[in-house]
Image (cartoon, rainbow, N blue to C red; front, side):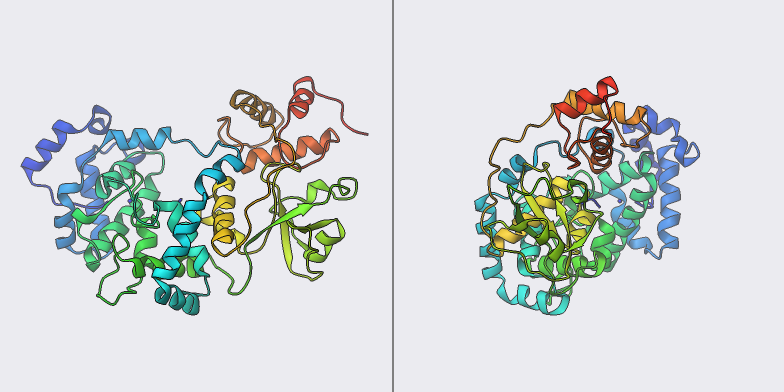
Length: 417
């Protein structure tokens, strides 16, 4: 999930060791913390934790893990967002074995899944898909000390406040008795458990579904199921009884009548309107001619896969704002629920290489578009700029960058009249 501590009772000897192992950048003081060096920063976090009603005992228990790790900070600064083409990413992450494992988990934990659907309205397939993608059902939860990751990222200036708050939440989890500091092992970014909850999500949404008095998202399957359902329903505003994603087909004779610029997650039309524009189910059956609103999602443009994204798809983009990840998670859930495999594009969809997407982002920036980081990765902000340029040059506005569009943008192009 896109989704750290605290405070601390350090004896003089502990502080001496910490100073000896803390990088010079941390010893000299971070500008975003008023120039405090790391030990003084920890003391301030200790006071913040106490103000947040964390007990002195929890802070003392956590203290040995509160050390600075420059390697964690380096990983955070160097992380890459999803750059693969959607069909490649989905083929790997929504593979048949993961679908089959999801179905097996639903059968093995039938009672917990049934209870979660009754209480929260979240279908088992939706929970199982996130479970599989985030950790392969608990097989890959990470192997780094959570407290070390959190305190390092809280001291770093890139997302200091976020990780400060996440760390206070981690201390509260310890204080509540759900996990001990030594049990807090997870990803480098401080996420915990089999569906990779940030500590704030863990503290706010974890539930005890196995009745042992603890909320353990590392080892209890029922707790994982109930907690994930609670977060999706309560935190991400899941709408009971409604779909999330359906593969569709845009008929071959449609391009002249379907306005491609309407294929956008920010635009919704009734299914009856999409049906009038020639959109059908993937197997060719007509869409219901009803008023249910949906967006047409084209993750690889008009010649690639097509989906209707419903209101519940917003839960996926909230869980992870990468469109490729969100679409893959939604698609995997449909497969676990019984949908057929995704249709292969009739022709290979060309993707611009990294350097050309980066060049396109640079041109968009000069044109006044805010594409965020110029990184050669096609994020939502870049797609918005691409769509605007396609409209400008009279090209099908499906938000997918092409060599033709880049050529027009390089030369200033001739806009359509």
